[in-house]
Figure 1 (tube, rainbow, N blue to C red):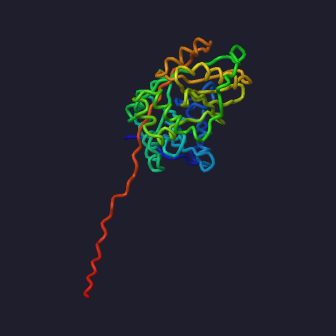
Figure 2 (cartoon, rainbow, N blue to C red):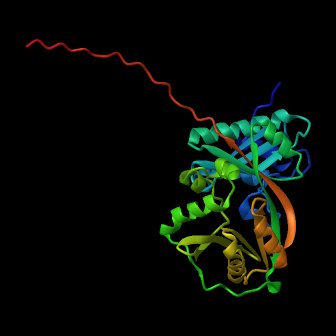
Figure 3 (cartoon, rainbow, N blue to C red):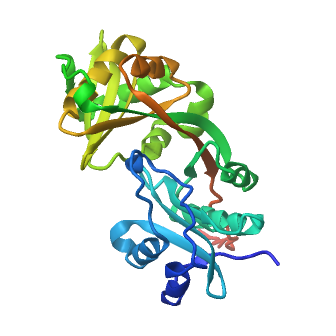
Amino acid sequence: MTPTARTVLPTDLPALVTYDGRVYANEAMTLDRVGTDDSPHPLEAALEQWFSFATGRHTWISVKGARLRGLASARKRGSKLAWEIECLIDAEDDDGGVLLSLLDQVTEAAGKSGALKIFLRLPSDSDAVEGVMRCGFTTYRRERVYRIATADATRDEPAALRRRAKADAYPLFQLYNHTVPEDVRRIEGATLADWTAAQETLGKTAQYVIDHGERVGGWLRLAGDGDIGRFDLIGVPEVADDLIDGALAKLANREWAYTLAPEHMPGVESRLQERGFEAGEAYTVLSRRTVRTVKAPKAVPALVRTTFG
């Protein structure tokens, strides 16, 4: 019998708090958790589901008796057109039906809400990657974590760095199209709306740009979280060093600076290594299109009125 997943109920608390006496890892990683071991606990995810009007999260659980079989929690990304899975727990490694049921629930709910795509980041060496792909997800980019102690880093802020303005939205999309390969853009951001929806949060984010000639040549986003600072960037090769310098200068009050460098930007990886960044975990990002419910057209009898003059 294929297991089914459903939304969380208050009666699930025993399974969430004491699920078989074991702690199962959350396989999903989001950009705003890079550099920490923080991971939404099943109990936390369940409570947030009941207050989803405030958190914007949605949670599904698979239980058998008082035992947790799996859990998935998702939230929107840059807009309601895209969701990301932030918590994925599969406690039944030998039963692929649990994972399939959970991801199908996420996909159906996302489609009903108007989302077109779902994203999921997993450790590249995780067995879950293959299982998720069997559930209809496609791998489209690979990334690696890089970190550096800010005390050992350069702190000179480039003069060309300026705050992002509203008018920069489309020029940044043009920069994205210029610097990111087509096979990635096709899944992640084929249109301006798709690209905007797919953008991840770093937390409370500050954004900067660098002009290159008459166009925007680089984009830097960064956020602080306690002793950890996070940043990401895209840019033409000529401004890559300035973007990294700007990130380190802005995050100088943090103990560590972290970034996720995509495999399709090898120039950025080499520059990070030259600056003393340490390479860390490798991740695989996957995506799946949703199934949107569309009402079939309904036939309506035509009214014919004949007028005699």
